Image (cartoon, rainbow, N blue to C red; front, side, top):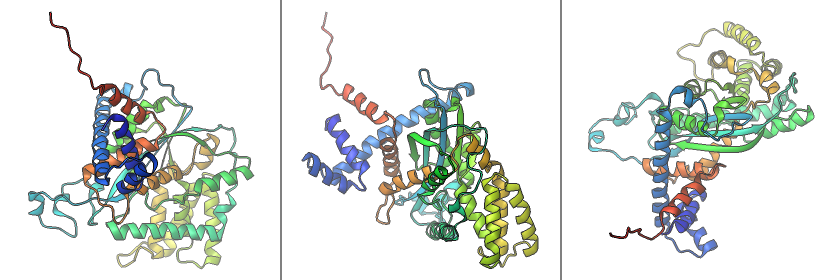
Length: 431
């Protein structure tokens, strides 16, 4: 295939939900008869080429002196507001056992060849694995002297809405634990309308949350330790490290904040407020009737919205004393466990919950952007009937990131291939 035809096939194989759908679109729209298996082969081959380019760029970036890694490439203009968010999705990986792995027994449901993997890459599920998604956004907002929205939005003190939110988060978390043996970062995600809710509330309070201008994505099936440099290299190419205002968004997963500590410590860390609210609601009603638990929740969510999380921690600690410490026989829904979990969560992340300050600085306070990006990847790679090899998954994730982002990477890649595919051989005239 010529580079032009390859580009059409790869786009169809990447943007559609399956290679079969891509083959059908090529026939419907371009009258090109390309077998689904050929669409798959071409797409994976080009994806592998893009992965090789990415890895080479990351290796070159990592080899730079620290001062240069926190700078920007020549000619790149740093944005006014740079925001980075990372999270994880899920997909199914087809087992490819080696002879050595097949000889090792399974221990506690964990395949023997996974014993040497780092903790964040160990799984109890048969096929479900985690992919990592990085979202890099340039945003537009205005910093202000005072908090533009000091009152907690009415949507967050609506019993019906908050109860539904808590159920959604709990249901998603339970499903993940059941299928994979552990909670996947980002899968217990905030609802898609979180940003819409904040924007609607902002209009009522003369407050405009940050507006996304352009988004760039990176994705991989590799370990978090390899994923971090990929995101950092992408941020460097965009001039993010020299942006006037910088923010890093995430949920409570330790892997997320390890990426922040290792690569984005100069960015303001922000815990997704929706996740925080779900912990407040669960702990306020733990062991209490709704009539007495709801006023407690309203008080706590008001404090958190205004950046006064320490007040909540004090009352949660008092509540823990009343209930007592968790006992070995307590289940995860026992009031002692629920309160203890929420208390530990708030204590661990209180430095990332200064929401009034973030609103003054014009920074986002929800990770719904990256949650939405994860779902866009899931539309292509996740499904009970979809099984990938590691190489195939890596190729598709890279291409999906290329096509979903706003950069010129895809156009530049195909232009280079076109320039190199002249179909002519240059000869030097003999003397």
